Amino acid sequence: MAMMVAAVTIVLGMSSCSSDDEPEVAVATQVAGSYTGNEIVMVMGEESSNDTKTYSFTKVSDTTIDMSIPEMGMGGMMTIPPLTVKNIPLTKSGDAIMGKLDSFAGTVLNASGSERAFTISNITVALNGNTVVVTFSLKFGSMPMSMETTFTGTKK
Image (tube, rainbow, N blue to C red; front, side, top):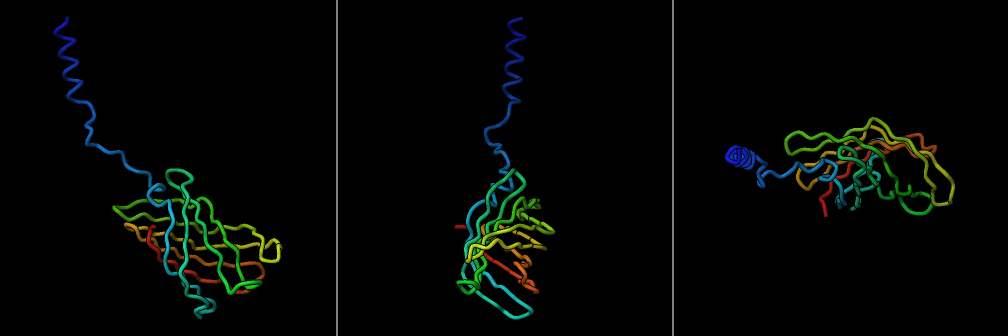
């Protein structure tokens, strides 16, 4: 009986998990953080701004993130305050991580303290290594046209 217990212990000990096996890090954890880079905003086919900005991503679950978009505009009443897009679902293929969300709507206070509605649509977040590319279309308040935005940044 003692020999059988010893044999079972040895067999189970040999087949246990190796310390070399590292668990897969959740995709949202891989994306989470701040990225600094170039943001280009196009309005009606014309470049409206081309600035260095910092976008931030926060892990909500293993497969979803929130994205913080910094303020944009020309200052004062022409400024769109920082916006947050919630619950962007992520998928992974090889080393590339992709997030897509058809539309997100919310409200935010503008520079004068008035509440303004916004809709962000066609949201994509593509991460490869430490580089993220974000694209989206923004309609803010009663603006008749959308702002087509592309951000390319590197993780800090």
